[in-house]
Image (cartoon, rainbow, N blue to C red):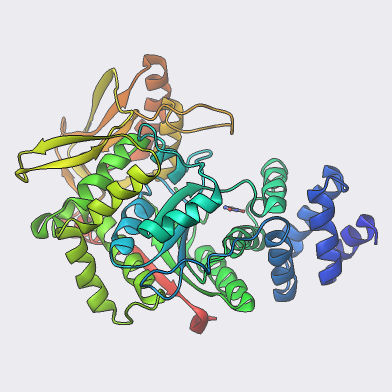
Length: 463
Ligand code: URA
C-alpha cells in the first residue's frame, strides 16, 4: 500500500477502505508517513468529506492507536459510566458544576478534560488554579478514585488516542481543523478510547465556539451521534448557546469561584436571574446524564434530585472530596451567610489591579462577543496562544451586566482583574469591541434576555 495512492483516491472522491485508513493512521503515528503527505490527505478529506463507513473506520483507527481503558471494574449505583464532552467556549464551567452534582447522585464519572488553546478555556487549566490540584494522576489511580468517591477529573491522558494528538497538531497548522468530519472523529476517538459506556456531548454554538451557526452545530452533533451509534455507544448531543460568555465570570480562578458559589446555592438563589444561563444548561446536562447512567429515566425527578443535591450541600461536599482526592489544598472558613464552617479550595487568585469598565451611553446590552472576551483573556495572560505558554490563573473578568440588561451611562458593565498594565491595554482593545450597547425597545431587550440556551437535543432518533 502506498500513501501516494491513498491521497490520490481521496482527492478523486473515492471511498477509502478500512485497511487504507488504518495504514495512514498507524503509519503517521509511528512517524513512517511524513507530514507533507499527511497534510495533503487531510486537505483532501477537508474538501471531499467522508462516508459513514470511513468516519467509523477513522475514529476506530485513532481510538485504537494507543491504550484503551477498561472501566468495567468500577461499581457505582449508576449502571453505566457516562462521559461528558464540551466542544468548548468562553466561561464554560459546566463540567465543574455538573460532575459533583451527578457524582453525589450516584453516577460514576471518569473524566478527562482538555487544556485551553486560543480563545477557548480548558477545564484542566481551571482546576490548576486550585493550589496543589493534580490533573496528571496515573490513569489506574484515577479509576481507583472513581471507585472510591465516584468521580475523577484529570487532563487528557497522553497515552490515549495518540494518533489523534499528532493529527490534530498537524491540522492546527494546515487549515484543516474546521472540518466537521475530522472534528467529530477526533472527539469521538478520545471518548471511545476512554472506555465509557455512554457519551453526552455539549456542542456549543456562537462566536465563542468552534461552530458558528446552529446548522453546523447540528451537523457536528449528528455526525458524532452517528459515530457513537456505529460504535455501539449511546451518544446524545445537547446544542447550547455560546453567543455571550457563560455565567458571570471568565478566567480560571474566577470561574472556580463561580462554581463554588453555584454549588452553595439555596432554593432562593437557584431561582435568581444571575445564574439563569448556567442553571438551564447544568440542569439539562446533569438530568440527561443521570438518565443515561440508568439511575432514573424520569427527567423531572432528576431535576428535583439535582436541586436536592445542591441545596443539601451534597454536591458541594463531593466537589471538595474531589479536590482533596487530587491533592488540592483546602482551608476551613466560617461563612457567616450560612452560619457554619466550610472547607474551601485554596486558589491562586491574587491580583494587583482591578478596573471597572463603564457604559459610555444609556441603552441595553445588545451583545457581548464571547470570542473577543476569550481573546481579551489570552491578552491578559489568562489563556494560551501556544501550547507552551504559562497561564496567569488570577486574571479575568467579572460581568455585572449581561445581554438584555438595561444600562445607564457610567454603569459598570464588567470588572477586569489583572497583574500587568501593558497586558491590560491589549485586552482593553478586545473588550471595547466586544460589548455593544444600543437604545433598543424594552420588549426587544426582554426577548434577548430570555433567549434559550438549550438550542437542540440530538440523539439516535434524530438521525
Ligand atoms: N476538539 C477536539 O478534540 N478535536 C477537534 O478536532 C476539535 C476540537
